[in-house]
Image (tube, rainbow, N blue to C red; front, side):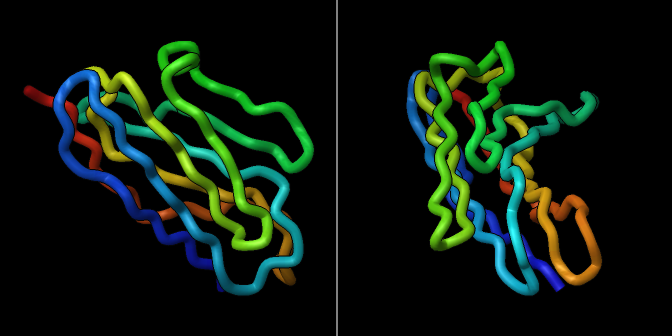
Length: 119
């Protein structure tokens, strides 16, 4: 079994910052990609940022230059530093990991953490 546990969500005023964390644990052989999606009420889930193992970071155009994704390989943990937050960044943020374990290669998801940007 694999678990992804997120933390760091909350409420912040426009222009503020938050840092999300997501730790993967359990039966993991290799992690290929970790990243973040978000989903606002009434909208589809959208990719925010991803960090492939040994690859180039990817960002949604709406967050590029404001958000920064990083990973601690020793801890199987991915971080999302969110700066200059806007009300439209409000959503539930989900982390994911595309990894290899005894069951094969598949995606695992966290439970989601709420981010609210409001004055």
